[in-house]
Each structure stands twice: as structure tokens, then as C-alpha cells.
Image (cartoon, rainbow, N blue to C red; front, side, top):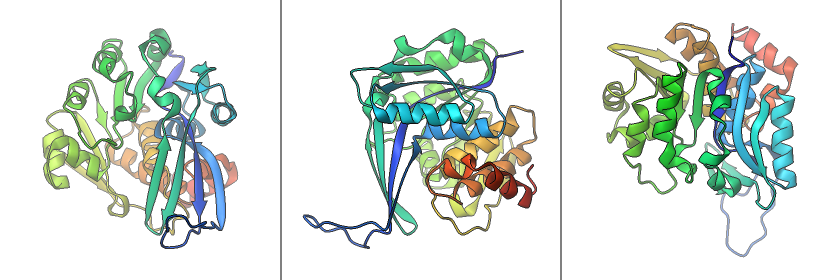
Length: 311
């Protein structure tokens, strides 16, 4: 019996979200927002938080600064049931923060990485990481101090008998170097969005990307927003339509999809069921501000899942 269902490695920061901004931001002007939210942010932490509230046992590895934002993030994870004994506190550093400015269906995302850039090999407890059935990593390109060690780390997780998954998220430098493909040799489930899939595959459309990536990874899952999610396993292709909902906020929807998909995957569900649960999880995420607030409200979460036949 493993200690955790899933071991998560990645970044942690808070999200500051300003709503109701004017359609154009002008330099040297003071613009007023109509609403504001501070929530747990970052792909890895949102994922860990939400999959824990689905009932998975989660061990989280990251680092935070010795500041109030770091304390806030760690407390939010603890409240969701995530084990944070793998989170290191760097007292002389600052925790990262992302400022999100939504404009209709698009948004500006401004991130101060903070301790994300400080996470390195010496902060990892390999026995802790291996004490799970599954290993997941998000934000490959942001983990700069750790990046060189990731191919070997994924290989070790596979050697220890864990299944593995990766969500690269965006490359802020837009380089998309080939070391990602080295990591993919030890990945069981790859979970990019449409743009990320095309960038990694070096293609211009989702069909070609699915074909190319399926030669590298056993299961490729591509999140396409309103078009739903597509998956490829060998020669078999799957699709799950997105929910018809009026989103309040799409922040963290992709990470919430990952949480739903992998919660079912590590329990041996079929690929179509995993896709469907992922889409319902993404829809749930969009029903409240930020990437975790819809999950934190237990009654809201359970009612939403029951309404869509996912209990």
C-alpha cells in the first residue's frame, strides 16, 4: 500500500485576479476594477488541491518563501487534504505571484516567479516522491533550476514502478527546446493544450500533433477549450465534448481537467471515462472565481458533479 495515490512536483504561488476592467488599459492612467479575488494559484498547486478534494491522496513537493503569500498557499493546500511535508520554506526568498487581468474570453497573465526558479534537486526527497502510485509534474519550462534533472527524475519514477504524467504549460520564452521530448520518453500521459501540443510536436494542427506525439507517449490528451478534449492511445482516438456552461472564470480550468482525468486514470478507469470526468472537472472550475474556489465549496462541488452524472 503506497502512502499516496499521486505525488506532485512543481511550482506554487498565489493568483491575484482583477475583474471588470475597462476594455482598454492606457499608460499612466488609474484603472478601476469592479471585483478582486486572491486564490491559490499555479498549475501544480491548483492541480494538487483539486485532485485531493476528489479523494486522491496527494503528496506535494515544491518550495515557498518565508512570506505571508507562502503561508497562504501552504494553508490552502493543507485545507484540501494535501500533504505538504515535501514543501520547503526558503526564509530569505519570496513566493511567486500571478496577476490575472481577464478581458472577455482572453486574459493577460503577469507572473513574478519567486521561489519557482529556486526549486532544485537538493530540495527533493526521492523516497517521498516514490511513495505514490503515480507521479505528476506541471510547468516544465518554469522549473529552471530543476529542468536539467527532469529526464533522469522521470526515468527514476518509472523504474520505481510509478505511472507518470506531464503538463508542460506554456514556455514563456517560446523556444520549446527538445529536452521536453527527452522527458516524454518516461511519460505515460501527456496533457498539453492545443497550442502547447502543436509547439512540442512542431506542427500546425491538432490532428498532426496527436499523430506525432502518439509515437512518443502511450497516451496523449489535448485540451481544446470549447471544442472539448481529444486523446490518442496507439491507433485509438477519443473525444469528449466540453460542458455547456456559462463560465465565471476560466483560470485553472486546464489544471482542473488534469485533476479529474488523473483521479480516474490512477483508479483504472477507461480512457473515455477519464476524458469525460476531466471535462466535468474543468467545467466545475469555471463556475467560480480562480482555479480552486469551486472545489473548496463542498456542497457546490458535489451538486455540480451530481448534475452532470459524475459522483
